[in-house]
Length: 213
Image (cartoon, rainbow, N blue to C red; front, side):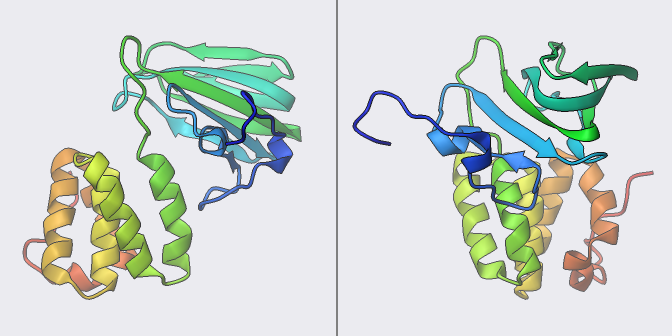
């Protein structure tokens, strides 16, 4: 922050971080605490908004294409979105995603849960943790995840990644405990765990979760 009552920035000038090169972390850049806002930018064919829904957050989401041309898929329907197009997805359970068109695209997304104060979503922390895994910095990843879990104790993704870090550090008992907590919150983590190299050292443990049928 500065002494001025406002700040400015360009999307190109915002430092990108984490394991998602398409992510421009607008909310973090300004320290915005009242709503979620980010940008996603990439070249032709890049996945800018991975297919997902917002059941876990209850968020409404508004997307604005600020450059190029994007192709959205919302509830199975294709939506061509040239520059200036707004796409609003009000139902949290609706699947949505977007890819960049032939000239690339930039999408600004905004969201929040109606009637509730905004809370930082744990996926932002996970996006910063992935590069630490790539560099083998598992102790630092563990610290970041533990700090995030103090604020989001029921976040399955954070627990899963913490288990991965602990497994890499040789802490089998704690890793198994956190992995089982993650699976209890979200059963799909059991399937991911069967193929995750970070958890390979735990697979001979009889408590290791079986993939869902």
